[in-house]
Length: 368
Ligand SMILES: Cc1ncc(COP(=O)(O)O)c(C=O)c1O
Image (cartoon, rainbow, N blue to C red; front, side, top):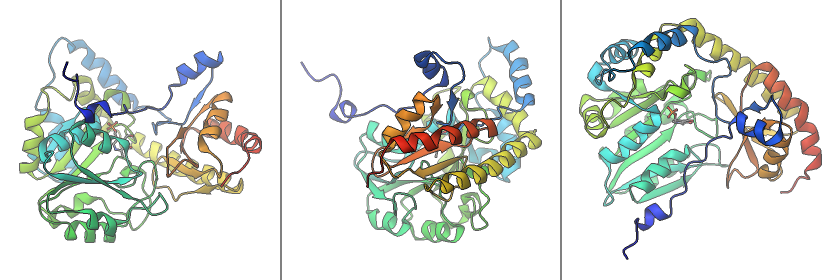
């Protein structure tokens, strides 16, 4: 019999999401697990978004507006671009997949970094695209010269997350400009700005302002993080009308559902809620980061809603011990197998982590 699937599909390992709090509560028979594992907003969605979802629920029997006219108009005004320069996706995750399907074939080539967002590698592998993986400096900082050096004549796609996940670090605007200018014109540069709302570094610049540097560039944004709508799955891409039209060709119809469109419009109108989420994150990020440093742990300079923490021990062991204490964080494979990614939560959630961590660390010897 012929194999059911091709070798590259056989070799795929599915994406591993953060452990749901309810799952740990069931396992431990407890009621108050703290989830600091998926970089979600700890304060929840804007009440206006919740109300918009309620109102939109009355028309669940209708298909959504496939063109998402109102939302694309709203986003085009926000970013001073044309509506035809915006494509929506079922999370920015779908847009990553659409970029792979639209812009690169298995006779061409893509470049990604490691560690960076896991779904770039997954989408590329699912489509059997030859891919070069460029290590980050110290596993934490983009090495853009190395990315450029990995580009070949057949390279069509590069994914950069800025700020990065799971690293939490950012690329300075001047370095990103140089990179986007130096990248050969063949290449579609996808700059994924999922965490841009949490940035306070003075030298950060969104690639939205760099679109003039090259025709083939796309910027990805999401409603899952600062806008706190992760469950609704909505992201968008901004790029030239020509590139966006190809994303529209390969997407499935109605990929941005009606509840998500309604909620996003309402969330965009609630600037005060967005500001609350960003300010709380800024305060708690600084506080938790200082407390972890005081425990002797290395904390990468975060521009996101999570911390990438060098625990100086096998991180999987620390992760498992924290689970026993009802706290869910996120471990990673090499080169970050001594790091944990810890989302910034509510003050009381962060306090839970900080209360149990010293004892957990005492129980697990350092091992270099
Ligand atoms: C860098 C980055 N890009 C994209 C995503 C996907 O976000 P979503 O599909 O929820 O829009 C994530 C999610 O964690 C991320 O960290």
